[in-house]
Image (cartoon, rainbow over all chains, first blue to last red; front, side, top):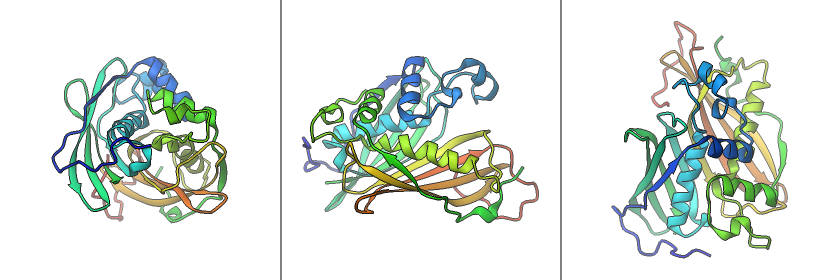
Amino acid sequence: MATMDLTDVAAGDELPVLAQTATLETSVAYAGASTDLNPLHYDADVAADISPTGGIIAHGMYSMGLVSRLVTDWAGGPEHLAALDVRFTRPWPLGTEATFGGTVKEVGEDTVTVSLWGRDADGKAMLRGSASLRR
Amino acid sequence: MALNTDRIGHTYPPVTYDVSRAKIREYAAALGETDPRYSSDGDDCVAPPTFAACFTIMQGAEAMLGDDELGAHFNLVHGSQGYEWGERALRPGDRLHLTTRIADIVVRRGNELLTLEVDCRFADTDERAVLSTSMLVLLGSAPTDDPRPCATEGA
């Protein structure tokens, strides 16, 4: 099961950084898997009309899913994740790389709290969030 | 057109979702997940946490857009998302009952912030599997001279 069980963590610890380039392939795969088939995420003509960037952007939920992967890999498994909250603060254009990471904020008796971030290729905040983990 | 704030607190009829091994595998692959349990053929197969997106995001959207009294529209962005999971993992064969509720509607800078909750419970025990809270930003439809208080939080 869990490989780490959050026994040896301290406030201030940094989670490993996850880097991912969003592409048409990742976007179509996530659309099909999640059943969110909004064409904003794979159709350039639709995106030209309605996208905040004028181009195709990744699903916000794709970035949240990557953050979840980052946190659960670090914590030792999905059973540790009790809550995850994110705000999507900037779109993620296809063809660009985003990075995700986090910092341990608080270590309690039963719970570890982590703050999370996602940045676009220019280093601007794309996502902000927090996770509550069961030890 | 502005949203109908009389719909705050409205709960839509529950719908059923059946968790399948193939969908868990497909979802985990789309995220590049490497935990072998997500692709296991055995009894240890579990779903990654945000697999909940498969049955909460579109469920909420369908409830909202199918509600003639609400007045929602497609010109929107996803402002924020929260999930709270119970201790029991989702596994292939689990049946869930999903209940969507309009938790809040507030106005902020000409936009309307619509918060939807989807309460997802195991059909066999009624134990909560996951609670989804989605805040959607409906762009440009806020009424002018709106008497409602402005939200302090948003996209």
